[in-house]
Structures are given as structure tokens and as C-alpha cells.
Length: 389
Image (cartoon, rainbow, N blue to C red; front, side):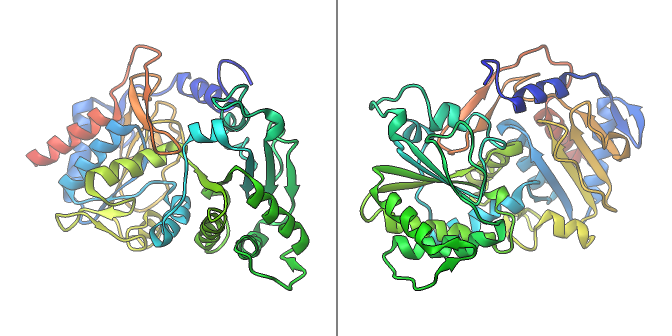
């Protein structure tokens, strides 16, 4: 891997450094920042049920989004919340046994990776965390193992990596069987899905013999019906293993700052995504306040979409008037009713993002002189304009 970062970071810097729109637009016509703020404020002030979505921004941007939602009675939902709820619903039900990246780096001798190859989504995970050159407690590379279940093994995984191949739709049966086997239940079935039960018995024994194991998964890759039940099965596996050894879960995430948005909401109002401020106080409902459902059922009459980190996520097409805060290369800029080109955290201005293990807020430093306003500045200007309406 290059010392100058991974493929994702290089592509992101290149994309955000390309020339693009540097002026606000109101219905496709160039406008001053004040004119765009006034137009956005009028849309939100006149809406019965506004929605603030996307939420791909840094800590300051998310704090400003919460303030604006409180001001105009909006619903808040992240573009990635569908994947995040696969973990959240399970954790709300049973809790979770998780660990930190530092613990993984220095102690883990067995990785069991469920349903993802990790490297394509998190290119430096094994390089920097899973198989580093040195550890605090002298753990050697030869002592580390990795087993991939239902996913292609990564070339740089500890190992050599092993694999248990199965289709994604077989993962619920495989995880349920593995939960039973790690708990000592005798199963008479020959297979779980397409996986021989003897192979899962072997894996259960390997997991029990680990000194410090980790189950790694990315919720976005568990793309099957009722995937939260698969996450619940992972929780049962961890509970059984921790009776005799040390085993932790590693739910990888953070794409488009979804963990940052969730963390800010939790410490600001005590609730996760899909929270509404329509009644003057925060209310959480994972079904009623699902942004995709609201837009599909035409239950929102104004959409503010926040995408300050990249050209993604793209705002969905809907009947609702669209207020877009995105980088200067946003493809949806000209179809927005109001468009604000905003600066990119970590390139145009400093900021903070919550790390994937949620124990550290990482500082971002600016790498160039800012030409555009930060999302937090635009959102607070809109909030003040609504106050004056």
C-alpha cells in the first residue's frame, strides 16, 4: 500500500480537487450566498414535514444539522441508515461485546470475517490493524490466523487466510448453526445452507482455542432480509465464546460519516438516526422516520440533502423541493431548487470524524486554503434566516 494513502483516499482527493461549481444556485440560476440562504429558509419554514438527509459531514456539520432540525421541526436520517440499523436493532435488543482498534492490533490472534472481504471496503484494515509489523505484546505474524466466512479472503489478511465459501443468502443459517455449536449444542444436521456441519464444528473449536479472537463484519455487506437476526446470531456466538476465552465483535463502518452522524445525535439528544423534531421534542421511530419510506410515500414536503465529504451519497429523486449542500462537483446541483457548494472537511477546513470503533474522534486538518463555506456555516445561516421568517 502506498505511503500516501489507500485507493479510496487518493480517489477522494482527486474528485474533490477537480474544478466545479463555485457559486450557489437558486433554481439553476447563480445566486449569492445570502440569496440562497433566504430561498432555503423559505422552503423549510413553509414545509409541514421537512427531512434532512444524507448527513455526510463532520462533527460540526452534524451539530449544525441537529440545530436546524430543531429549528424547523425536521426529521434526521442518514443515507446509510438502512445498513446501520442491521447493527443498531440487534444491539438495542441484546447489547454488544466490542473492542477497540488498539486491542485488535496488539492482541488478536484469530479473525473470523463474516460476509465481507474487508479490503475492498476498508483498504488499510489488515495493513494497519489486522497484521501490523509490530505489537505491544510481541504477538508475531505466525501466531495470527484469519477465516473468511461467505466472503473472498483478502490477500493481506493474517494467515494464510482460510475460507468457508457460501452464498450470502446462506449466512443466516451458517451463523445460527455456529451460534449453537459454540454454545455446545449438538446438531444432527449435515449442513447449514451449503456448508458442511463438520467444517463449522472445526471453526467453533478454533474459535474456542483462540486467546483473543475477533468477529469482523460490515453491516452494509449483510444485504439480505432481516439481516439484524444475523447480527443477533453473532452476538450469541460472542456470548458463548466469552465463557471460556476472550472474543469481541468488530462492526466496521464509518462510510460517509455515518458513525459520526449517529454519535452526534446520541450525545446531543440521546437518540439515533430516524429522529423527528416535529413535535418540539426529539422522537425516534425506525420505521416512520425512514427517509427512503418518507420520500417513496411522498410524506415529506422539503428535502435538505447534506453530502460534504464526496459526490456520494446522491440525493434521491422525489417530488419534494431539494436543498443540496454538496461539493462543487455534485452531479445533482442543477436539479436542486437551492444548491450550496460547500467545503470538504479534511481538505478545505479542519474538523473531526468519529472512528469506526467509536472510541476516538479523529482530528482533520485542512490541506489547502478554503474557497467555499463549510456546511456548518451554511446550515447555521439557514437556521438564523428561519428564525427571522
